Image 1: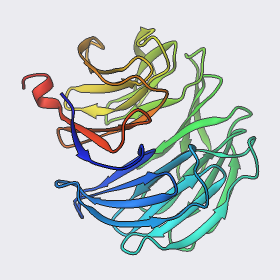
Image 2: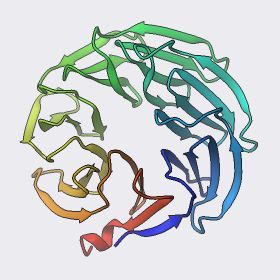
Image 3: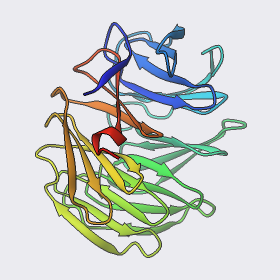
Image 4: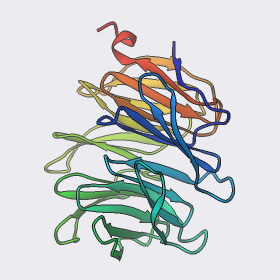
Length: 288
C-alpha cells in the first residue's frame, strides 16, 4: 500500500519537506541530504556528524535547515548545507535536546530537565528558561503560544510575548510526549490516552483510553481527521477528529521508532525498519 519515494542505503532518522523548493531534507547516519520531492532524486549530500547517532531531528524553511544532535544544535545554509551556526545547548544525558520547532523569528528547543532554549533566527542570541522540574519531551508553537508536553503528563501553554506560563494542564498519567494543534482543538497524547481540548478554553472535550497498545506518535491533522503512528504496533491509524473514532488502520513494518509527516494529501514515513522514505495517498485509503 505504501510506495517508496526516497531510496537510501540506511534508515532515515528524520526528515522535513520544503514545498517552495519541492525537496525533502533528510538525515541518515552521518549525513544530511537534499532530495527532489516528486522524483526522489538526490540533489545534494554532505557529512555533518563525526559519528552515527539516533537522537537527531531536522527541520527546514526556505533558507535554513535546523538540526539537533543530542546536546548540539546546528543551523545550516539550505543551498550549500554548510554549517553557519552551532551551539551546545546541553552538556550530558540530563540536559540533551528533546524537541525542536521554529517560527518566523525564533527556534525553540526543549531541554531535558524542564528547560526551554529560544534562539533568535537573525543574530542567534540564545535565551534559556526553566519551564518545569520535569523534562519537556516535545515543543511546538503557533502565532500566540509555545506548547510543551512533560514526562509527568503535564501540558504547558506559554505566552510567546511575555514567556509566562498561561496554563499547566493535567490529564495524562504518563509522558505527554506528543500533541497536535489546529484552529479549534489541541490533541495531546501519552501511552495511556488521547485528550482533545478546546484550543481557547483548554477544557477537555473528549478522551480515548489506550488508543494503541504501545507508545505512539500523533502525526498531524488532515482534513476532518488526524493520524497516529504506532511503530511498535506496526500501525498507522486514521481517526475522525469530531467523534474520536478509528476509521482505518494501515499496517506497516514493526520497529522501535520512526518518523512521519503529512504534506497535502500524502503521508511520508521513515523508520528504522526501512531504508529511505515511503509514501501513501491518504485520500485513497478512505476512498475520498
